[in-house]
Image (cartoon, rainbow, N blue to C red):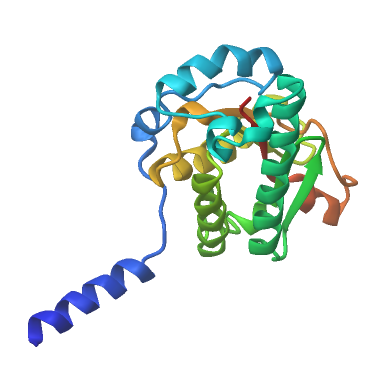
Length: 224
């Protein structure tokens, strides 16, 4: 009986322990296979055979052998399957992430998750917060199920005088999220990681807008 209680306490302690990013010196191990570039069409085409070789699959593989995919125009059928697949993914993410600082948007076939910095990071430290662990954990769980996708993780800052520092800070945020995903068994060959500094602001550069512009965007696109 005593051993059972001790085992239960150990499980509870592990469950309650706050996530902490591993030492930076170990990041290359977790990010092996990640592409540090924009998730452009040409980059996806180049990465597809690597991804498939690492156990990945396409949307057609994911939806299974449906008879309707064999009739008519194959390209159009695959596009329709991708739209349906991504619509399901969008709904799952939207339903799971109804929290402050998090939004789920559709961009054509792609789905974009916007996470303001305060929704994933500690207030005054470059570390994943308890709330960030919860948000990213829910995202990871869904991405594991909808795994016929590429993922671009892009970090952004607010306007800064030093563009080099802005790029470094934005890349740090993106890499931390990528490391978290890799630790939680997201295939690294699915991921593209970029730091875009103060580029592409989505709010004014005032006191409140700056908090919104400090963010990580996770863009998810189907593998066809």
